[in-house]
Amino acid sequence: ADPVVRLDATLRVLYLNSAAERALGVGCAQCRGSALAELPLPRPAVAELRATCERTLQDGVERSCLLKHALAPDGKAHHVEYHLVPEAAGGGSPRSVLVSMHDVTERVQQDERLRREAEILQQLRQAVEPDPAAAGVHDDGRRVHDDPLSEHPDRPVVERHAVVVDRAA
Image 1 (cartoon, one colour):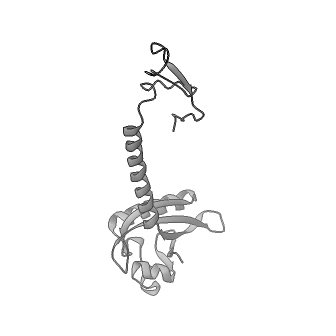
Image 2 (cartoon, rainbow, N blue to C red):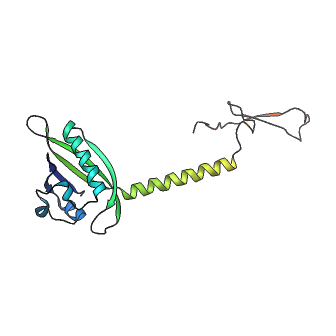
Image 3 (cartoon, helix red, strand yellow):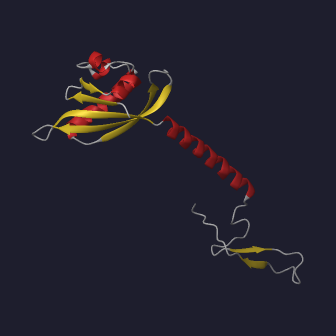
């Protein structure tokens, strides 16, 4: 289960589930009533969460933010996606915000690997494939080139290829 923290309108802890206790390295009873700033998170993460919670409580709109910081018990840096959901009171204005935390470190690392591989592939493609205009490739896929074995070496040869490369990609 993902860590979940419920904060009141003044950003004090109302509840931590057991996953949040493990991720933060603190107990619910120990944190209940504590300010968001008192949770064992790095100051930049607390500042971003505070600002996002305040906006969520102000306009009642769900929000997400992605932060990188250390988590207990390993103390290593993790990419954590925070999802903030306002909880409305009887009058409709938010009275609390439910904050779920999801470790997306693997997803972020995979995205970075895919991005690097795509860059390498693009570089290889550019090194192997000539510029279509320089190679005489027309928009309809025809290739024009000189054929020294042709009966008429002074006339270019026009080939029609079944596959047209999408130059927009």
